[in-house]
Length: 114
Length: 113
Image (cartoon, rainbow over all chains, first blue to last red; front, side):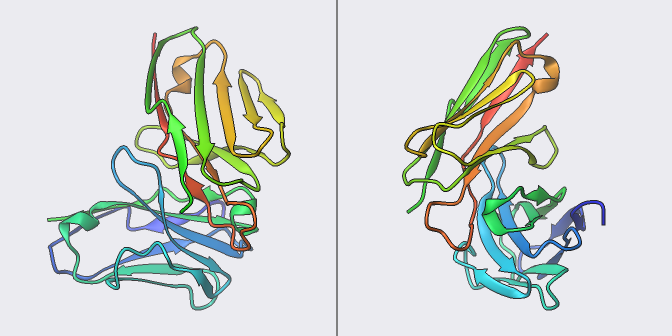
């Protein structure tokens, strides 16, 4: 596609609810990142995929967070039993070669947990 | 662990004034990337610097990468209202095979007309 596409753009979840955030990277980009961005902060790394392999998940804040990219293209970030501190913008980015080349970001999903 | 620090956190300038933001890493970076995020938007890539001491220019923007590859700066000459946004530096640390990008906290630039 023309750019990185994320859906939904906005999500309101009740505390305890599970959510799934989708990322459609640029076609041909082997690298995919998920970041969490709180208001007034820089993007915080969550996890990184190279094709379908999740090479780094050290940034996932708890075992309630799970990400997958089963066919090496579309990725889903799942948050189980959401809590208020999970409220943030979740950004997906893709690139040709990890952090060594330009990363293209999607518009993000703003998650609000009430 | 890896930390990328940026200063200042906020900068307010009058249109026409210059602006500089500084980025410092606790470890050597293999490259440094700069991104701009407009209010309500997502980060957009500006430039990548790879070589020690490298300087690159994009119109009114000048980017520098330090000799030790631990610091970088972005300088904007004669700011315009279109420069408003948050500027982030980011980089994978040297030796990283994964290319995990660490982002600084950003410098939020406000330009008064």
